[in-house]
Length: 126
Image 1 (cartoon, helix red, strand yellow):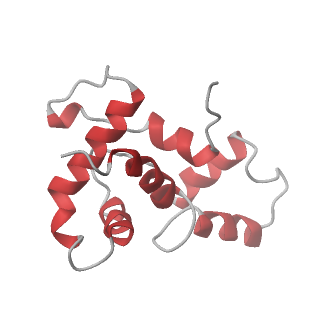
Image 2 (cartoon, one colour):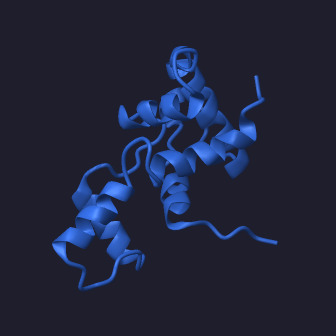
Image 3 (cartoon, one colour):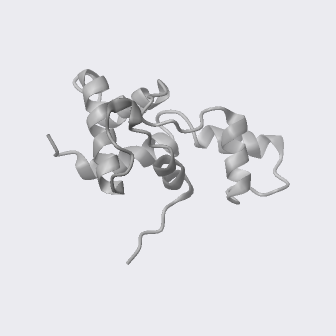
């Protein structure tokens, strides 16, 4: 059975870029996710001891790591949302604002938490 990806998960997967880490981008999805988690742990693992891993992961992602280049400008997030019918075509400015706030930042749903969910599958990897 093929998994159906959410809007956020698809954007995340499409934007994993391991080329700056001397890792081929021609590896399977599981390995891409696993490698992204390893990069997070090596670059930001020291923060896991002072905060929970999910919060550390969100903070790492907000620092715009080169391994994961998800959109971070509201304009880009909203364009993708309209393109993928995640927000109605005649949305008000307030609705756009609420959507863009729900798609970014720690402590809310969206990119950071969706990717964190993906990394859990490789959590026990060395």
